[in-house]
Image 1 (tube, rainbow, N blue to C red):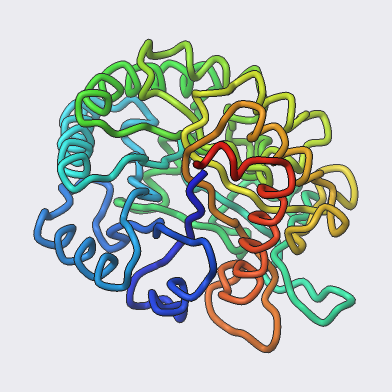
Image 2: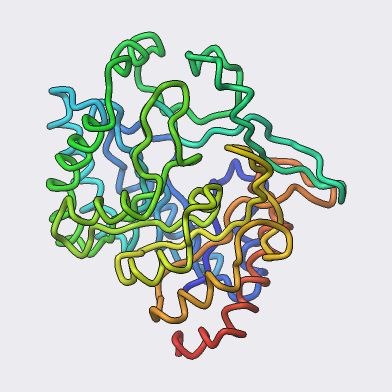
Length: 345
């Protein structure tokens, strides 16, 4: 297993020097965040990014994310050129030694929370979600909630386009996309790692399709290529108690190309908040998760995902340095304890 850490570039309060000092972290997960989904990633910018990371004594192995344009998700005629752009970006990333590309296929926006700074009894703050706060709101742009909207056009145009989209449409458009990009990724030496929907249920009357093991298996059947794989996110999938995470890991096996480990505490029906990584803090049995990764001989990248904001730290909610660094050490300790270190030798 390769322990990694996400970095949002020079605008991130967390620096490469910070990451380099976390024991066991070898690789940085990042992207060219300022490039729109419709554009080619400039090789010169990638070269500079790679050089900066390597100068800090780290590797640039994983891109998160290479966004999928909304026209591809919608199946618009413009998707042909956009898919070719995506393919060329995969080729370029392969030339720079990137091994894994994480992406998602959530319609209109990806992650959603109803609070970015819920106070916990220990004095830390975390991101949280309560579906009751949005169940009566049909328009995501009127909700005034924290979410990420990767927009290349006006919200009104996209809302109109998505008004009639169905789950079947999304599946068909995902299949169309994967059948064209997976062979290119395989030839480039890049593994595609689809991230599950976060949270894994419909919001604002928009369908979400990557929600459970059946959906993950269906993804793998859409394109017959070993490069067509998954990001197994314990936080996204773990908010649904019906998802048996260790069993999913064992059954999906080698098609898991990237591991996101974070813990969540389920507080009600479609209600949760994030917590520190240890199993005793939340609803995810992280030891059982790491045992499952050990059982399948997992050797891919793993990163600690969202954590608490602790010790007065400010910055990107969920992506502070301190709690994620503690999370790495906890996960490495579990990995050593279940015998995973032997798989790495």
